[in-house]
Length: 94
Image (cartoon, rainbow, N blue to C red):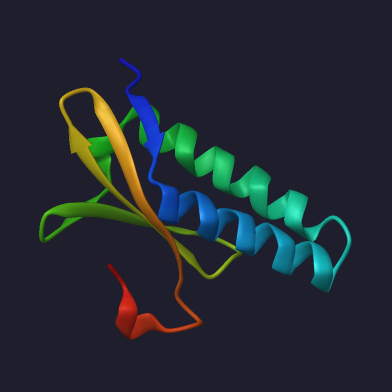
């Protein structure tokens, strides 16, 4: 079963900021980030309970990029709370 994926506004803004940052750093790198992110979001949608439970939410790291996807499962919906840059400020993780 595939769950419905919902991005919170904060997560959407974090994704946009990451895309712009990587595109500014190197043309095409923002697209690579988005491809990796999309792959992980599809994995989460297909099997959300596979990912590690921390307190009241689940999380997974995006390999090749210093980002952590933080999400919750409510009924058959996946709520993406944050796409968190672990290099910017790891102590501020949601």
